[in-house]
Image (cartoon, rainbow, N blue to C red; front, side):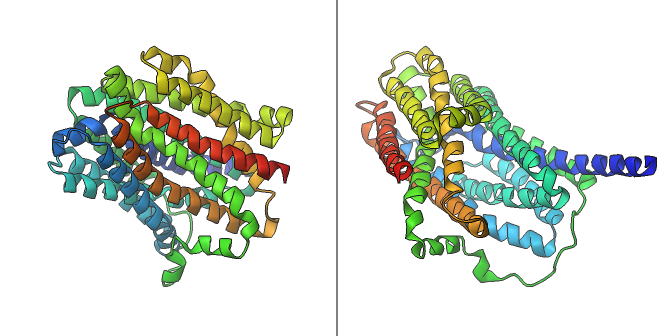
Length: 403
């Protein structure tokens, strides 16, 4: 028995080291996404010399999401064939090189190329998820996937604050910091990250790499269209913050990079805490439909205050109300799982992932275009456009819940 306990301890320790590397990679992915938000308007103004850079922000955000959408299944399939470790190492190396490239990019086309490469390297989330599945027993996976989501949340909190703080010293400094962090993680992975499984070495099925393939199922099961549409709309609203927050903060409150980063960080903290602690009790007390609608109502109230705000402190004061939005998606996910039987859950989740990815491509272009139109007259109006999208989603949730 003692020998068995020792073996289990050795096995758990061996499994802990790869998890540290994987979780570090996820944190850095999220940091890389978040650090660019506070500095992107100033960086684009510096490169393009344009007075209104909102369309450029939308294009860069959509490009990042589009490349990630296309290459996530490619990297996942490639890791099945050649192994998780080499794909993760190549992704980390690519991320480090890319951030150095962005640090010294002197033109718009170079920034676009760098952002596309960033989307490619961040698509390793699918590989990281597969790695955790490989090294975790069924009884461990839920907890470890929960930690994975927490790591992403931590990175997205740290990223804007780090980007805003460093960007006030030099616009390119956040990229250099991200390159150094990814380089360090690459060295750690080279030493500590083993290959968790034997690669199949089979030829890659190109048809299986089509990111639109999961959506084809929707044409067979039209009853799922309403809930897919709700997921799409709620995901689209989330893109407004990354696209317009920094521009709006600078235009209305004259925030520098630090304050933009702090506000985004505060938003991330409140959302993370709300998603961690509120959905379970809220669903038990209110039910899934009412919990979703409560989250939407809280977010819409906060957005309305933001639309008319003239002082920066108001944004921080309404953050607890804003955090109620954290109720919505977990409750919707619980409702969604009952739309299909257990044999089709994987297929259904793939459809949801594709729909969310498409929203991440389309929404930044729409919100940035709207902000371009209202920036001179009323920048805060962009938040009312988000409220309008939420209102459509809320009507669909009401009908879905009653059905």
